[in-house]
Length: 368
Image (cartoon, rainbow, N blue to C red; front, side, top):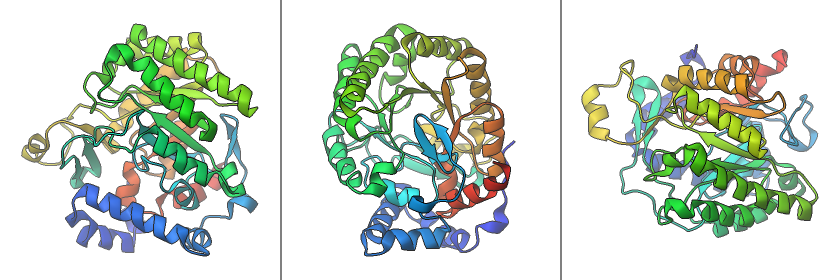
């Protein structure tokens, strides 16, 4: 069960309550990204960030590492896709204490996403609703950004996954080649590739989760990854990210397909289109917001259920990254105990503040 300890947020609670919560959610997000980019680009900026958030120097990190997907993770908690869509600040986010960062979702073609406003906070529920629509500068721009990040020894060691989605203008029947194009451009810079077929904000995208439509996409991306592996002489795992709204039988069918095709594993889960009665936010406010993917603690129960389903069907060596409703170190530990290899969060950082990933990592250390 997800719990909340409000006593440790300190100054950030005041900042959020009096400043950030009064800004449009997307505006606050852009301000955060720009601020982190500025600080990290200053001489000594990475060291300053690590000192501020209590994060060890990654080049001399004494913490025991968890080996997953061919990489060493000094914290099992990573940042889910959606925060750094264009790979602007992956190293800064790692310096905040995440064990890995998943950039994107990126599409083959640059696209503006859906009309604004498109991101909304449900403050009583510590949750978000977004209908961003894969707004990003495109795969080629992300490749250039990641090439810069990978130039240093620090960047070469960083665990940066790349989440790829379908361009809105691409027809569903052409989706496999659209994903292939992005995979080809980004493979040289990715620690792993994540295939996103589960966002609710691109028309028809979730239809690609049916086994018949999903298979050619998985095979196309896996083919590009295998070609890249031979060129790069390193492993390049491929995972698929699924929705919490899939029926249990469909979750199991996807797991069987993942095994059949030879993917490394599954990321579970994305946001939900459901609006549970347990939400404390006024229903009129929720109805006014309208369509979009809901994230936050309300996802925890279903995310855990999907994790158990996947573990019951996948082979033991398949990787499951559990995502959805994670707030505390105890939440992370519960997912690991239930069979997750890694855990991802995003929404909790909006409400807990930038010290959240480092704090969770430190609290997990005695339990490792």
